[in-house]
Image (cartoon, one colour):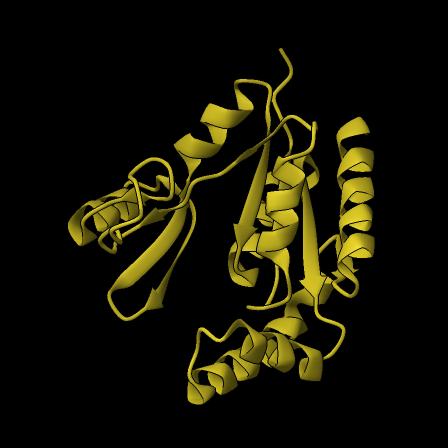
Length: 189
């Protein structure tokens, strides 16, 4: 059985990567989502092994020391997120293709590790103004949080050249069709 390939979607918050990944998982591409590990406690609606692999901060650091992560980052003070190598290989060994929804630094690191076995897609908002509008429209963050996310997005946009392809997230049906084509073409290579 041939090992599956890796398809990485990275983007600034609000660009649409999660919507694209959810859409792709509903198609018949043989994709499976890579479940991330985190050192934070589960929220009441979350399940270990489904939403995340929930590890204690000590367990997380032990796995870091043992080089068990493909990539990891302390996203917030004391809260780490990462991709376990064993999770990626578990999916690939079933012949499935692994799809990632990760931040831009994680995306770059996964691409470096797997090279041509991975397709790295940078999902880019049409403009910073549109991104701000989307974040405001979510009604989930306070204005100062939105401004922090926009500032971070401006920095994250500088990573786009390190990805294989930039997918501009404009009109949703067009964006999803373009994502379908990217994935289909890559899997067929």
